[in-house]
Length: 448
Image 1 (cartoon, rainbow, N blue to C red):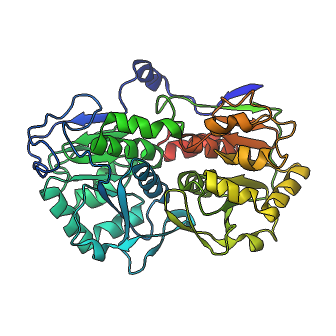
Image 2: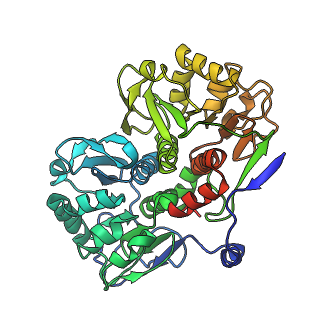
Image 3: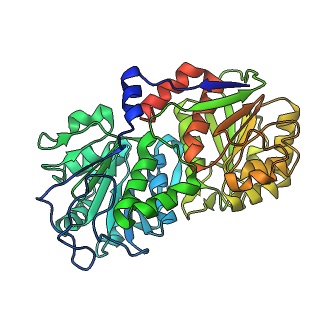
């Protein structure tokens, strides 16, 4: 057995990790407007350590608006939606386009709940903007959204943005004036001069929350949960997600029986999705592998292209599974989500395709519920070591290596849950393209 350190940290960062400073930086700002009295105690003191505002929003049905656009970074949008809905928030996903469906980055198609123009008269406890340069520009240029966010901020509402959106949207609207904020590293120069730039993974200043990119999206989303509901709730939500203990630390992929994963020119990868699939896992895998220039086919095992994932995110597949099954793949990867995994297990055609993949000594893998519910159930883990979602590891015939966050055994790769999805995807990238490519991608996504 070999434990390979996929992403070594620079020496200066190792010294920071030893002291383990918080990945979320908090600042007070006396010029921010006081939030509505029915929601908060206006005499709050901003905390000096990660915890929510004193007596801040505690209603489990907090109203949240997440606008999306053509070119939105889907990973950032979906993670924020997923995590906030896990916390109990009522999240409205609103398109700034003329249609509910948006063509997000990396060919991922999402369907909104509403149009932004239909949200103009609504009130929200939080408005959070995802990034993606093209998407952030389209958010910025939407006059209705600008009006909604400015009115929300003037009333003291909590507002947030990640990646390009802090500089491109919030900054251009004047909503970061006099505040400390962060954004994607390469667009820091687009931040207005009246904003204090901070190179931290998540920054909270007054009622504004900003973050850096795809690799900080889970931390960003959990910080929003903390602002709405408090640290205990954020910890409660984070627990089942199998989060990394310390963000930014070196992480490992454990490999047994190492073999090379072969392909001709461009890896052909199949990612099936179903109603109830875990959207965070599916989108992180698809997004990351397409960034690496793999050809990823997203196939619906349902009767329609559009599926409704476990936290009600609506995703449109590229093809129906029957069409996808006509092709051959260098790799088949199953996202988790218990209902989605059960749908995979019930799909005779999908199971047979994975069995042919295994018999041909071609790579296949799964995360979260799918290793136990699909692969184990159909004999696809025979003679293999695997991991799965912690509560389902008792269903594995051999759980001896199940504590590993990402586990490779020959042509099989498995992982544990939403919080290990990025490591899982990067582990796949390393097996296909090599360690250097995985490190380069992890840095570009601000994961390392």
